[in-house]
Amino acid sequence: MGAKEVEVYPISEACKTVLEKVVVDHPDLRALVIQVEGIRIKLANEKEAAVINKNQVNPYSMIVTNHTLHVVLKEVGNGSYSDVYFTEAIEFKDGSCSKKIIKSAEIPFEGEIKMLEMLSPDSKASFKIDHFAGSFFAPQEKLYLGVFQPSDCDFTKVDYHKLQSPVSFICRQLIDVCEGIASFHRRDIILRDIKGRNLLINYQGPGKVTDFGFLMKMAQPGTKHEALGTVLYVAPYIWDSILGQKYWNRKQASFVGGYQGKASDLFSIGRVIQFDVLRLMISQLGERYQVPVLTFVMIESTPRKQIGKFTDEQLEAFEQSAPGRVLRDANSSKDQDILYIFDAPEMMYGKTVEQINKFKGKIPDAELKKMEKLAELAKELQNPSKQGLLDFLKKQNESAGDELVQEVLKQLHKILTPAAARALIV
Image 1 (cartoon, rainbow, N blue to C red):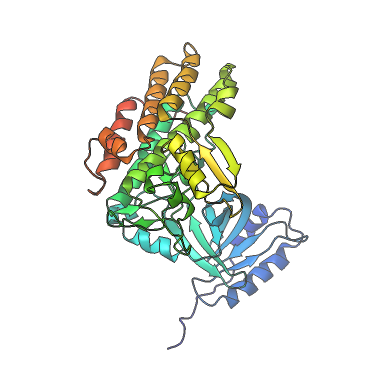
Image 2 (image 1 turned 135 degrees about the vertical axis):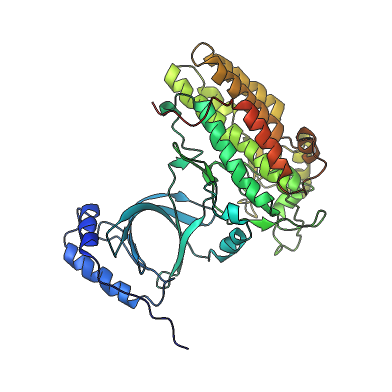
């Protein structure tokens, strides 16, 4: 049986008009249209794409699919294993246009897509999960492309200056992303790479969880697997010892591995609140009200870094000196260990509240109280003991559906009063 014939229709005049407005500084729009039409005709199927690279003549990189031309406006950042771009998507048929996000990677997105297919029908339609809007393969560049709806920014880039009630707003966004996480936990899927850059902000819409490269079906308790995560956000208790952090890969002869369950995702939320939410908020509020917070933002809130070549015995000694607070960067090499030593959650909480109190009389008392409660929640979620976290959430284990994250949602709802709804933009 032959391949299904692909519908190729001429680029509409409406599309050409829009294209002319988007690529205003292209020297020869007619030549560009001819080039794009020629590329489209050669596409083998609906899932194939082609890339037009930026050069001296063409000021924009572009991605061509059968139905859409994506004009790359800027690079947004990097995911777990992908580059992320902001595009203007122009439909060939009628010239309609919309903003999109495209992720390009050298490995397929099939694993992520299959895991997302395991979600419930309601979760597949949820606006609190950054679902694929399409996926393609560009054979010439050997790149896999995923298309997504855009968001305003991620949790590390929130502009708190434009918000009348910044704490209420971020609580609402945290509720949204935790509801997104709950969709995965109900299906016993662990995200494993929750961090500020993987949580999306929308000033007039719901927050979203994104970047599903490390999704994993929850393993049987007591088993060992390749346990990993971003060093500043990962829970220490997924490994029995720091050697599990060093020998995490099954390809290593001395493989130790670890076990990641749902509790580890919630530990990461605690880190996000501490390092991506509170630190950024305190920094921006300090600028707005001319309050001295720079020492906290730049030094006191940052884990201490220790670099050297350490034996296994020395690594274990580091861990014993600060149980549950020493993390080894997975990017360490054979010749160099990169260690991060975190303050105890109670100590970090005390430092954070000290900074929050500097804003008394400058921001509303209700917002200050919520900020303190958010810091307290971060402290509890960052408990270096899994049992300590389970005790805080009043649960015996992490196996039952989304019960753990539902307890976190209850805490967030307690912080966010009913009157504090969405962001009010100044």
